[in-house]
Every structure is written in structure tokens, then in C-alpha cells.
Length: 373
Ligand SMILES: *Cc1c(COP(=O)(O)O)cnc(C)c1O
Image (cartoon, rainbow, N blue to C red; front, side, top):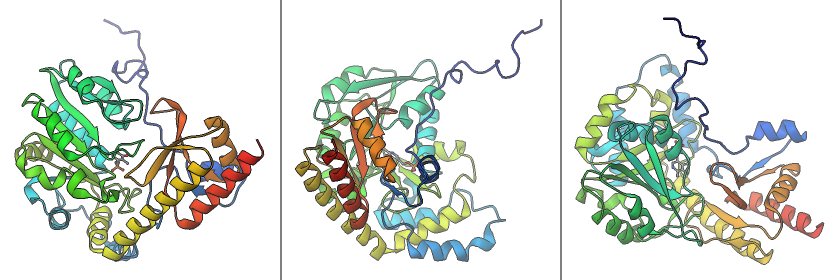
């Protein structure tokens, strides 16, 4: 029995023709392509202040430990997270970015070829990327035209084989956040076997956590999981660190299947250090909230449609063609995020809130581009 397929053709069906995650353009890419020295990147929702000084000290201090394996399950980091967020250690699972936790949840909860996963459209594309990889059907309910959540449309897609429903709040790419009561009302209508994953990657930036965050109420519910990341407010995107908080029994299954050292020793120490750096966190929130208001006002004055956002980015529709505008900004060394790829929104752009200076440079560039029209 000879197979005619060569090694690179004999590949799992789900992997052939697989669409990867598309990230924002990198600084080096734009430097090279446009022959520029200085770049302002407002594309990937990173922290405008850079890396916390305490994190930099911790990384230097622990550089000597790079040859050691870390402790399985990052127990020291888990106690720091438990203290900071007032949640139970048993409920926390850390990951190499919250992307890894999303991947673990899907592999633990969903059966290939049988289960389905439900989310809104558009949504953070990793839910779909990782569902596809697992051969799990991914169903999407259209958001309303103002990017608020159509709960009925979402519920219509849920059946007894729905293993996970993903909600992002504040949402990416719009920045919209529903009151947590609405999410609880959705939860009450889901089958008991279905896990509701509430991805709070940007919740740190919302001012009124009482109204919007599920995390403080988590212990009351068995089938809700909240995701948080260190990539955004905490400024550790490049080190890869996130966590999920969930019922201890579910957490136990994730711990069983996880790759043992996926959170590396420097990421663990960096996570502990940044949680202790209250001045850095407070300054991040201040700069982000002030910048969000500044950009919203200035962009509206330039005839952009600006969607209200509780996150560290804003989604806009430009008064001129979005891809033209994006190209003109790239020529001037400014990277923002067009939403064609991954989100299928050709007219919309997502702009990360930068420092006051970066935001001003963006507005001046936009004025120049729009006047030259
Ligand atoms: C950025 C982001 C994440 C976090 O990803 P990491 O893997 O932790 O860097 C998760 N969910 C959403 C919606 C995001 O935008």
C-alpha cells in the first residue's frame, strides 16, 4: 500500500488552507519598507509607557536563573494574582499569554467534529483560529450596527453541543462594554454544560469595574471563566503572560493538560513585579484615559466617527477611504490597525491610545493628510 502523498502534503485537513492570526505591522517592518528612523506604533494596544521599571529590575535580577526550569504551575505568581485581584488561588491558571488559556479551554471543553463554539462577529480572531485548529465548528452572531451586543442572535446559535460561548468586554475592536448584568442574564439562559468565557483583556481600563467586570463575581458561578492578560495595561506583551480564573474543578483539568513550563521564569517574575508597581499602573490608567478623551474629541472635530470605548484603543470610521489614510500614516511613520484582516471591517480603523506626545503627532499627521485631500 503505497501512498502518493509526500510528507508536506500528508497534513491534517484542518491545517491545509489554515488562516493564521494576522497581527498589526511591526516597527521594523515599517522602518524598512518606508526608509524611516522613528516610528510611532498605535496598532497593538500595548502600554504607552513601555515596560515598568520594577519589571526591568526583576528581569535583570533573575537573568541568572534563565538556565533553570521554573516551578510547575507558577505558584508564586498565582499567589500574587490572587492577592491583587481578590480571587482564589485554586481558580487561577496562568498561560503563555491568555492565548494559551483560550487554547487550553477549547481543548478541554470541545470535542472535534461534535461540539460548537459561539461568539460575536466581528470578534477577537484567536477564538476562531484556535477552534478551527481543533476541528470545532465556530458560529458567529452579528453584532448590532452600532457594535453593541445582540444577545438574542447569540442565543439563537447555542444548542446542546455548544461547549463554549466567548464574550469580549470591553470588546475588541469596538471598545464597547455591556453592563455585567446583561452578561449574567445571558448566562442564565445557557445550557449548564456550556462554559461562558468572559475575556476581560481590557477591563483594567474601564473606570467602573463594579458595573462592568465579571471577575469580582466569579466565585458565584460554576460555568463562567474570566480571562485577563498582562499584555495590555501591565505592559508585558513581549514576555507572554495571561491567566484564566474559573471553577477550581475546571482549573484542575487545564493544569493537567498544560505544557509544564509555558510561562517562563522571567515572565513569572515580571508578572509579580508589575502587580506590585502601583505607580506604574496608575500612571498607565491616567495617560490612557486622558489620551482617550483627547483623541475622541480631536478625531470627532476632524469628522471621524468615533465609537465610545472603555479600552485603551478607539475604533473609528474615517471621513476618507480607510486604506488610503492608513497608507498615508505609514509613510509618516505612524502605525495604526486597519480592520480588514481578522475583523472583516474594511471601513474601520483601530487606534491604540499613545502618550500625549504620540497622540498629538497622530492628530497633526491626520490634519495634514485631510487638508491635502
Ligand atoms: C490582546 C488580547 C488578548 C491577550 O492576548 P495575550 O495572548 O495575553 O497577549 C486576549 N483577548 C483579547 C480580546 C485581546 O485583544
